[in-house]
Each structure stands twice: as C-alpha cells, then as structure tokens.
Amino acid sequence: MLVDTHCHLDLAYFSEGPDAVMARAAVAGVGGFVVIGVGASLDAARAAVALAHARPASVAATVGVHPHDAASHDAAQQEDLERLAADPAVVAIGEIGLDFHYDHSPRATQRAVFARSIQLARQLKKPIVVHTRSAPAETLALLESESARDVGGVIHCFSEDWAFASRALDMDFDVSFSGILTFRNARPIQDVAARAPSERILLETDSPYLSPVPHRGKACEPAYIVHTAAKLAELRGVSVEEIRAVTTANATRRFRRSFSAGAGDGPLATS
Image (cartoon, rainbow, N blue to C red; front, side, top):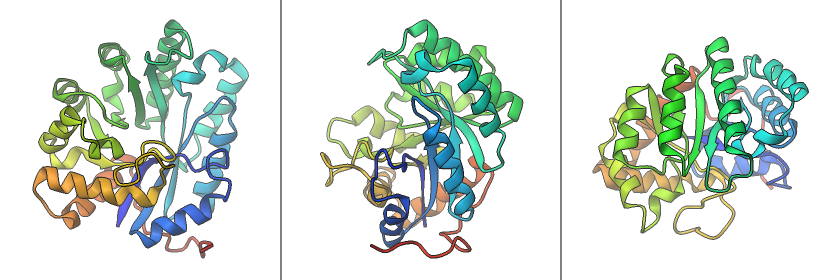
C-alpha cells in the first residue's frame, strides 16, 4: 500500500468529488491520503476535515494558511482555523511557509503568518507541512527561530538541494517527493532522494499539480503516485515493494496514525 501524504481533493479541483478519485487510487494500490485543507476561504479546510471524519481509516486532514493567502487571512478566519486545527482528524498544520517565487502576498506578511502557524502547531503539538519556493534561507531561518524542531514535520514537494535537506533533517523534518522527482532536469532533487535516510522519505502527488512522467501536462491525481514510487526505488537501488513499506511506515510515524486502505470506511464510488 502507498500513502499520498499531500493531495488536494476538494471540489474546486475535482468536480467529480473525492470518492471517484480515491477509487482510482485504490486500484493503483494507494490506500492512504493526507488531504490538505488550504485556500483563500476555509472551505477547503472544512472539506478536508469532513472527509477525514467520513473515511477515518484512509484519510487524514491538515489545515493551514498557504503563503499565497497570507495577505487575505484575517483574525476571524484565524479563530475558525484554530478551532479546526484542534480537531483530532487534523494530523498537521499546513501547508504553511514562504513563496517568494509568485509573491502573491507581501513577504513580511508571509513571514508573520508562517511564524504564527508554527506557534499554533507547537501549542497543539502537531507537526507542520512546509511549502517553500524561492526562499530556502528564509524558510530555514524561520523554522529555526520559531523552534519548529519541537514538532518537526514535512518539507512538502521537496525541490531544494542536499544542503537544504541536511539542515531540514537535523530539525526533524522529513523530505517528501512529488512527481517532480521523475522530471529529467531534477538532478539535485534526485540526489537528495538517493541520499536521504530511508526513515525520512515520503511520497506525495500534490494533486492536482505536478503530474509525474508519463502523465506530465495532465491534472495529477493520487493514482499517479506509483510512478514517483518507481523512480524513488530506481534512485535508491531498492524494490518498489520496499519503497511502499518504508514510506507508509514513515507516514504512520510522522502523522501519528495508521492508514488501512479504507477498511471500515464504507464503499467507494467506482464510476
């Protein structure tokens, strides 16, 4: 069984609804889903939590403020978010972080919201899921200054180099690989995938983004994680079966919950 540790399954992305997407994933051997609840409103966060309650064996939720939405996130939303974050179905705070590539929110605002989000995670004793783009030094500095190592977490959609990975690993952050790992120009990421300790690697799709080869250019979905798993196995010189076992065990450890391929969740739609 594989666990997709980072996917967006709300209706804004999949109009057919999550059941059909998860059913296709089940056929591909994907039995666990960490559904990310972020967005300009809290609709996606509420949907992620509701899905985790509806399918407790296979789905866990996260909630957080994406750096793109930092500028529009107000005090009332923060109060509601904190209530959602305390829900037992929420296994992490995220995705949170810094995005200096698009700069959809002012950088100072991104930093402030990121810091506040880490503080919330520390209060709740939950790990964080980190989004970082074009801000490697700033991200590491904030993780350090806000004592994020107290809760640890995941560097989602890892796209940095070994120097970044080494510092993140030292702060108790796992590295999670998306479909980018299969891209021809992803040599630094592939180097990290080959070198990282086996107990610190995770897999994700970031659906509906970043489809792996051979689906590049299409909307991504959890079923496609098998291609990233195969590439990770190739880079590490191990079997796909070992990657399945190791990454599922790591997801269980990091999010402090087991995934059981939908057992007890009721039937999934098949069309």
